[in-house]
Image (cartoon, rainbow, N blue to C red; front, top):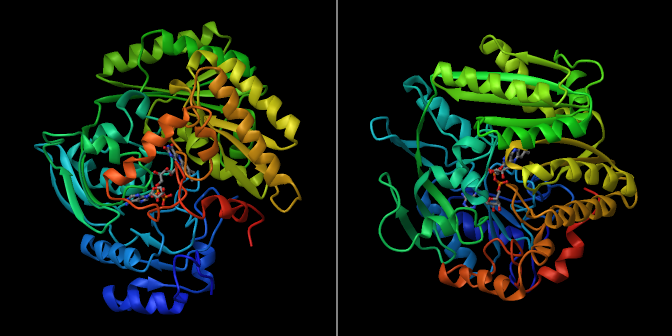
Length: 485
Ligand SMILES: Cc1cc2nc3c(=O)[nH]c(=O)nc-3n(C[C@H](O)[C@H](O)[C@H](O)COP(=O)(O)OP(=O)(O)OC[C@H]3O[C@@H](n4cnc5c(N)ncnc54)[C@H](O)[C@@H]3O)c2cc1C
């Protein structure tokens, strides 16, 4: 039994579970060593802390009750969707209650005529598209985790994905939210018709990483499927040619629906597991997709392929049907998972640079990992300069985690030097709180930190995330990092 932050609570985990269970139903509250282990981190596994209890509410009202209970008992609480976050956002940094949306998966209503869908926040992203696919529509934000990551998690992180290059990130597809603020009040903002008059609170809540309360329902915009899609993979014998080609494609004025890059480390890991074709001598592959009316989609992809040829591509494959298209996407879709073949632990980093700076950025990434003696594979949304160096290593090796953290900082410093940002889409979480100070002045950070007060959100609501100023965060920082137990 571990209590999260002893100054916050005076009850044992059993007592908390029992008291909370009395309010929302005992079957909705979990605790114990297995629960502590499973919920101690998200997909950023180098920093961990166990929750005291995990709540599995089934309604907005349940969540409001749980939040009020936490406030009353000075218990920190952390919202959690599917736990696929890559910056430690769903880690219960000071222990306390993890409030999971796992059971909030219902589609409440939808209108094809007016192009919206209303769902609970724990629904997996892809389930929304599956629901409206028969009508020729989809939900455009498509993080590569979309088969499991939740609508609430996508909203909290303002997630992107391969097709957000053309269609925009999650914020561009949310019409309204129902949410429970950090005081346990239920608030509705926007709705099927979108943002209502007054302050644009939707913009502030989207991307707030669960620090301003818990989203319980959302109205999302539905996007009509394009009439035609063209997909091609084009291969290069040097990273430099491939990355220069990305800048040229972006400058060409043709807007690809997706423009993704994978280096030979990713391709080798995927090829070991799936029947993908990788030409001999490939250093990098670009996956290009265009869409729209059949003629424009075809002429756009032809133009992009001709740009690739001007940048010395060694081979190009243009999908002739859906099966071939799926196969070309395999390297992208299975890339992160396949990296498990290279080492026991992977940490996916994330930063942004202007696409024209890709060649020097990638050169820097390979130099950084060499200096820190770890491995790296690159698979990322190249078209919007959204970089994902994936460090692979053995966390049981003494000092490995510190070297990985150092490498991440070095990469981000280079992103900033090249005019980029500390994160493209994976957020700040606990991973990048220190790095934010390299981007913003102290005044600017203090101003942003005051948002919690505006939304009635105490420091105990997802503590120590984004801009930590709460009690206990600094003291705990050192305890989060280390070998997974
Ligand atoms: C293989 C893989 C591929 C990925 N690809 C992409 C990608 O292409 N693009 C991208 O942007 N990200 C990507 N991610 C990162 C991650 O999937 C996204 O950040 C996703 O939106 C997280 O959703 P989740 O449900 O797993 O949220 P969690 O990890 O559970 O939580 C993420 C954050 O949101 C908060 N939160 C969760 N639910 C709520 C809620 N209902 N209300 C308020 N706050 C909440 C949590 O407190 C936490 O701070 C990827 C991750 C993996 C593992």
